[in-house]
Length: 213
Image (cartoon, rainbow, N blue to C red; front, side, top):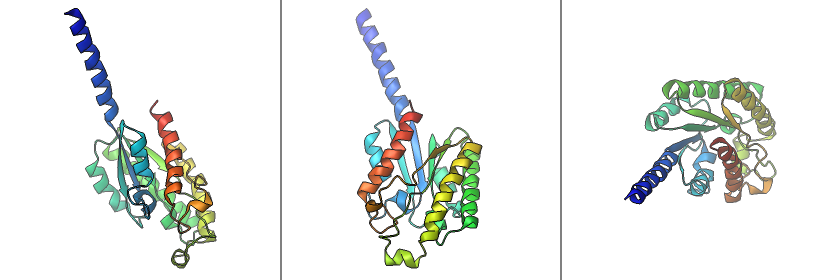
């Protein structure tokens, strides 16, 4: 009888632990790179979902989203009030023909997003991810016409540093994705192919694994 009771207690503890693990929820708020343009269903968010059994990942990416689309955050917050973490990966769409002023706008907008999340869900932690590099040599004609160019690349380098500073000021997490995707792993110079998304997933997974130890 005592053995049965002990076994029941052990099982209850194990089940309770598993339930606790399953409560982790991470919302990924971003643009087409989060959405997975060109590799729909096989992007970095989905790859992370396959790696972590104890985490629910929500893909809240939208093609073309900018940091200035601040009004789009509220519906995502409303639909995920049980979220433990928010990853914000935005900025490249703001930096067409980039300059320092546009970089500053990105930082200000993401700062506002961070404040909004903390105000609405005080327990949630925010992680800022810097946008990936781009490949100017393989940039498609349509993307060049949209002014993704050398100025964009330079601004992305600056944005990486400014996001890191912002994360330090606001006690947020920071994941550097700039430079993490190999140049050959962009299918149109701007969007990563599946190998590129695997590289993004590697960088994010490393951060998450250390975070949830």
